[in-house]
Length: 219
Length: 219
DNA sequence: AGGTGTATGTCGCAT
DNA sequence: ATGCGACGTACACCT
Image (cartoon, rainbow over all chains, first blue to last red; front, side, top):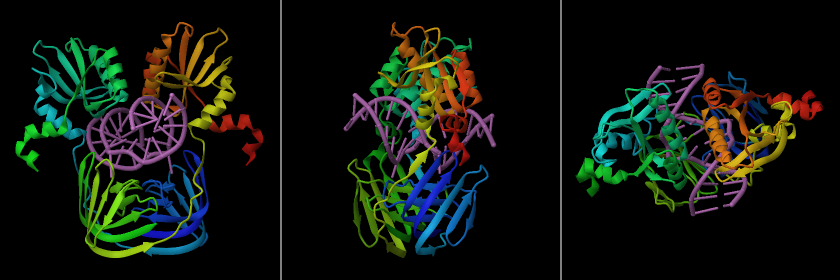
């Protein structure tokens, strides 16, 4: 990991053209070669960057970073304030818990949390336009296509609609209906879902997890 | 701008739970208070972060960062390797060229670049589900709804479809049709568009810009 | 504050 | 490689 503090100006040519007027900034060069230019504010996103793999040509007053796609990042170095490097070693990486996959897992384990009488047919049921989160069947034998989201927004309704339209073509699956499941569903998404005869169900992750292992709720 | 290099482990509790085992990392604290923890690889995205505004409570062996939503970032400092700060001053900010807005602007100036005979009715025509990029009329008097994207993907077709369905309700606008315009359109998006009777047009940004001010092409 | 759309999105996984 | 969906998406813009 190399960190350079310098007054610099920057030009980027790639998907778009971008220019950074002269100012003091932090330039981070990671072990994989990626370069990021940070201002002293504005969340974690750099002003400019070039991901690995790339080639860095370093001259006293100009750095030129290019990748295979033809994107170029030109950093004009006007005043070098600091230049340090460290060895980090391999990072063990981030461990996550509580993302959509876990929600889906919990609901697959007990679909009645979505609606009484549902039984799971298949998780990640694949169609030719992508995998359906949960495919269930209700007591009447109707196939129920379920899209699970952490947050229920309009895109999720579109996605479920596409799956339903696609699966309608398969006579062995008819009749079928859809349920949109999320921890919370925005009003617009509810309206869109209703207009397409898609039911909406809001579920609580903590309570689902509580059902799975009640003693964990004590912590 | 403060940069700390330290062996540390990290816990985040917020939308999800995340844990980082002990390793050497770079901790960036910007003037606005935001905190980012970087490994020595993996593009510009930090492993963990906390955006401004937040509160940072700094103790010798633990930093605790919290925001108003109740998210917490706990950094356990195991070995401090470096701790430096710099004054950057205000950053003049990034100047961009070539984003969707510019493409839309150029096409609004001359809709015949999309299709012969089109005339502009309104740019950013607002509907109750969002603004339509370009609303035009063709020589036959048909309203033409145009969605402009840098890259034409399936989402853009969905978006245009929503607008069309919405505007179909307004009898004063009928008949109407849609055109999906982008610098390049993916095959899947073309198929989806075709199945909905939406035309696809690919345009070249450089040539559009050339038409607008031919002498600029010389530079 | 909340909704919608854009992004050099990034990232991960499956084909 | 490309397609596709998730993301603590972030971010600007508008109501």
